[in-house]
Each structure stands twice: as C-alpha cells, then as structure tokens.
Image 1 (cartoon, rainbow, N blue to C red):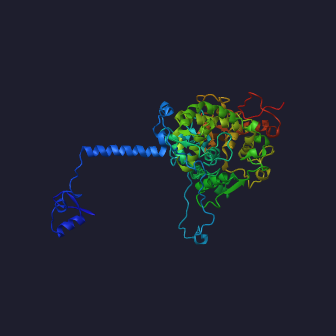
Image 2 (tube, helix red, strand yellow):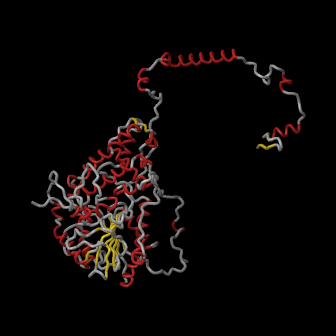
Image 3 (cartoon, one colour):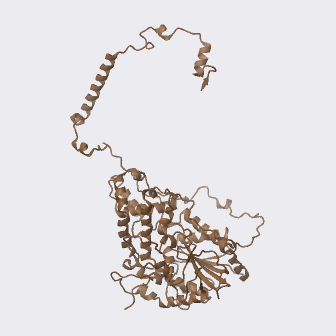
Length: 607
C-alpha cells in the first residue's frame, strides 16, 4: 500500500513514512561508512569500460568455439544465396492437429439424474384458452421474408452463406429468381384453401460418404502426418486445429431451422387447422427413420404445434432402409442408384471445375503449409469445412481463406454435382421422384393410388389412417436429393432452361441454383387456391418463397402468379406418371453413351 504526502507531490511507502516519524535523523550513509563503501559514487573510467568489453567479447568467442568448433564461424554459401536462414529448430504442427475431437454430451449415466424428482408436468397450469389461428398468408399486407442465419458469423462483407449450394441455410430467394414477378403472398382475388409442404431436414454434420472432398477424410490425412508438416500465415491456426464435426445428425442451428420453419408455417397457414376441428380429425405429417429426418420433423412439430404436441397431430415415420418402399427415400429400392456410372456422373464435372476455379487458391495456400502438399481436392475440402463448421460451431476460420469469386466457384461446383447426380441432368431423377408425384395426385383427387409401380408403399398408402386423403394441410420431410428428384419429375422445365451445365465456366443468369432450390431446410409449398378471377381450384408451386412457372406441365399456360387449374395440373402429372418407366430406370440394364445428356431426368430410352 502506498500513500501520497500532501503538498509534496511524492509517493512514499507507508513504512518509510512511519520510520521517519519515529526514528531520529542520522548522518548520511557515505559519511557513516566511508568514501570506499558501496554507498559512495563508483570511480570507473573509460579504460575500465574498454577492458571489460574486450574481456567479455573474448569470453563469448571462447565459449562458442568450445561448443561447436570452427563451424560456428564458417560462411554458409547456400544460406546467402537464398537470403533465408532456416531456424535451428522447426516448429511442427501439434501432435493432435487434424485429430477428431468429441465431447460426448450428455454423459451416459449422470450421477445426479433423478427423473422422478423432475416431472415435466406438475399440474397447476393456470388458464389455457386458445385464441384464433394465425393467417398471415391471407391477412397481412406483406409477406415475411426469411433472410437466412442471424446466429451464424461470417468474416466476409458479402453474403457468403448464399454461396454454399446445398450447404447454405435456406433463405427467401429474390422475387424474380425463377422467372415470375410474383411473390408467395396470396394473389388478388384469391384465397388459400390448402397447402402441401415438402421440406428438407435442417443443417447437419457431414455424411460418412463424400463423392468428392470430404472433411473427415482430409482431417485423417493431416493427422496421420502431423509430425511432418507445419502451417504459417493464414493457415497457422491449423497447427492446433482439430476436427470437431460429428456425422449426419442435426446441428444446434439445424434444429433451430426446423423449429423456426414450424413457427413460420403456423403463422402463415394456421387457419387451415380449422378444417380439422370441423371434421373432428388431426393432421398426419410424414418423415422417415434417419436420425436427422426424425429430429427435423420433431423440431418442426414443436414449432408448429408448441410443446407438448401430443394429441395435436400424428407423425408417420417411414423406414429408410433397403427393401422398404419409401417415396421420401426412393433410392433404397432402386438398384441402379447404386451404380456409380449412372448415379455419380457429377463427380467428374466437379473435379474438372475445381481445377479451374481453385487454381489460384492452391498457389496461394501451398506456401503456407510446409511438409504437406495440398491437392485441388484438399483445398476444396477447406471450403467444405468453412460451411460445415459454420453451421455446426457458428464460425469457421476456413471461411477467411477464399475470395468472393472462389466462393462463387464453390457454389457452382454444387450446382454441377446436383444437376448430374439428383436433378434434371440425372438419368434416374424422374423415376425416383415419380412416387411422390403419384401420392400428390392421390391427395389432390382424394383417390387412392391405383397402381403401385414405383417407390410408393402399398401398405401405408392404401391405409386411410396412415395416408389420409382430403386433408387441407400436409407436411412431408425428406432429403435435398429427393426434393430435386420431385422438381424434375413434376417437369418444372424452366429450372432446366439452360440445358446441361458446363464444367469450364459459370453460365450467366443460370436458372438451376442449388443454394436456391435445395439448401438446408429448403421448403416447397404446393399452394391450393380459389380465385374469383379464375375458374375452378388453382395450384401453384413456391420454392423458398419464389414462385415457379408451371409451363412445363402439359396444359398449364403462362400465368402471372404461376397458377394452373388443379384439374389441368393433375392431368398433366398423370401423363408424366404414365410415361415414366420405373422398372427400366431402376432395374434395367443400360449404359450412358459417351456425350449423352438429359434435361428431363430420364435414362436412355429402351431399344
């Protein structure tokens, strides 16, 4: 502790002040101990200092010579030529760099878990009357648009989240994204009478298999040689980086996406529940058995119905496994979907394009990691890691490594992949999506499926309890590939207007963008309407709040709000169903000829 003596402006330790006040003054220490004591001024001159300097230099020279001999003083030509002297000790990456990190919460047997002492319902709920149902789609002067992901952090000034293809969080696409100057709000003179919703699961960890790239594969390669490489510059963080991603299940952000989507749909279409009250029934929603699919459906239900949701609806959980017909996972009963020559054509296009758009990135990043040679595929994985870490952890250092142009390239690489592996350029797309179209036609016509000749499940679809007809609201959860299969099967041809996608450049004004069509939590609204200005019930298709033209469907004429008469739409779909050969597509023995392409999702024709 120190105090300030008033008036003096000096700081004096409290103990010194006390000594001065209690002890008598005395002679100076120099006077007391003499002129040659340690308290007298030093008497060193220039000669003393010179002798001391020379002696110190000589001592250092002798010490170095004793340690390393004459080599300490040898001129090194090779170092002079390179103008860079390597450090005697090179700092390598940490031994754990690239290793997998798991936190494994919750613990399997927590010692303080006593469920009986923490019931979820203790009574005394208070008053619980409900109000009127929301109807934003019908009553609000404008439509609430979804901007993406406020909880996630981007290091860039541009909107990076919209440049990640199927790894993007869903957002409301621009009003004219699909070619119509119309929005999802109810058109004038019309009212909404029903809605069928098809949505994807929320943000997840990477899948176990990756056709090209794959974060887990890359981290394993890095960790296996962690004692041989070191990173610097923008990659220096990798010296301590560990792989923190799980596998396939929803991330916390993914759970929120579906919870928010459920709330959003309740606010827009809650009024449709009145039809169930009047008929004394509850809705049946569908999902399938994979963890992320079931978790997505549950989070949607909590958002849509609130907690607890028991008694408010019934959740159909179809099985995603070989041998089970399932329109939400149709590839499980289509053997040709396991033939990579037919089902993984996209890899070659992605690999070629990555070599084009990542050329400069490889040159820029390679000098920043010594002892490990970065391939183009490795650098592509760094972009994948940016997206996956962001939706899982909220932020990723990998996002700082690339330019906006390189993110445009990454976005297009996923357009290529899904065009040729899932969408209009995929030879199995129509066959794999046609089962869902058959179910939609059954729902629209209130008529059971007559012939089960695709991925439809007769056991479930022929049972009016598990597959009810006549509901005003349907909700089905699936994967992004199935969403693209269905869009192709419906023949929404404007999305394929530019034809096969090239692997050497990005086409301008392309209509097939996976970040707009199949991002995390993508949602497709099949809106049913009645209009005083048009005869008969109408239908229109809204993908992530963008209205899609229906002109690819026979009989559906151009209409400013994208509507088509339900009867016309159904007849057009019946013709597509009749022309689709599931047996040939999924079980036939056929090959893809060199240079062959499709823009309708069909295989080469039978000979």
